[in-house]
Length: 280
Image 1 (spheres, rainbow, N blue to C red):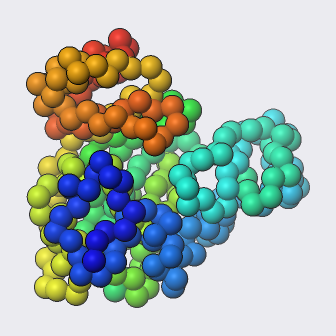
Image 2 (cartoon, rainbow, N blue to C red):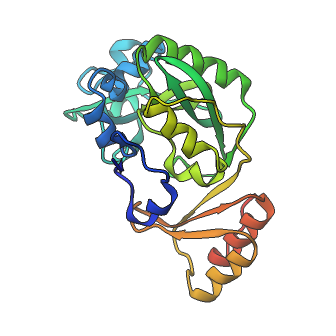
């Protein structure tokens, strides 16, 4: 059986193929995991973590927030791009928007953690740290393979409490150590930097074969090129010469390309050449 939901430009990465259906997209993960699809309810996730949150229609001021307090509004469940329609608003400007909720706005470091899970028990982690530089709340780049012991402890506990009986890959994103969304799939755009043992170990796990956790990931950087960029053949070749892979991105609104590299300096230089802008 193939992996389900792989973008055409990424198909070469997903080998070997598993014997069972394994989801790569959120829509496929929701369909194939009926016992655990509740994690896609972001309001439930927020309330379980002790955040101040409610469906749109419940005024934030009724839960003690001041009118000028900034909150985050987003769909309760969104399988077509988890960040779509998310935005920050004043508490007194939250709309009566069916199917959406508001939550206290979190601050701090944005992290994304993948976890291989065997019958509800975490067996392996890959952590990624987002940059402080943002484009509409989206990190401009991610450090793959970050050391995040406190996050790992939190994620491990969350997996044990939330995913009993689940076997496969999952992901959870935190801001300031508190959850914003979870997925029954991994951070697909980071897999290139997880090393050669990751995909075979994942496939062995889901196929019920002998499983050994892969080694710690070698890591690197994934850089989003938001806005205008010169993706001419000459500029792409120059980036490749620096050891930076350039993937045009026709799927994500506002993002021209994705850069992947082992070395931060090389990635930043490729970004400068493509955009005329510097990263810090």
